[in-house]
Image 1 (cartoon, rainbow, N blue to C red):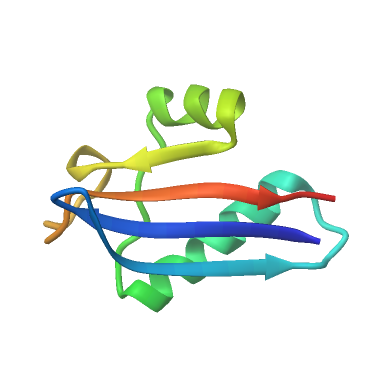
Image 2 (cartoon, helix red, strand yellow):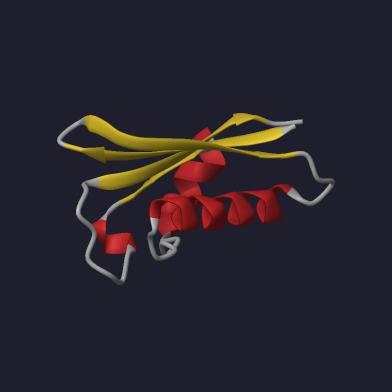
Length: 88
């Protein structure tokens, strides 16, 4: 089972969170992108842009933060954080 936890923060307070589970036999990358797409749909957000900083953080820690720089549209929070909490 693959599970990704997404959280929206403002002023160091979590405003929203969601956990996406994926039991498919797809690749890790496809599961991550599909889960992020689902999170953005649930939170009514545009999909963030993966910058080099996000890619390297995610490779090292299975966790990254998307700030205002990652979104084309204006966001009304400080950052969106995603983290893999379970992997098969």
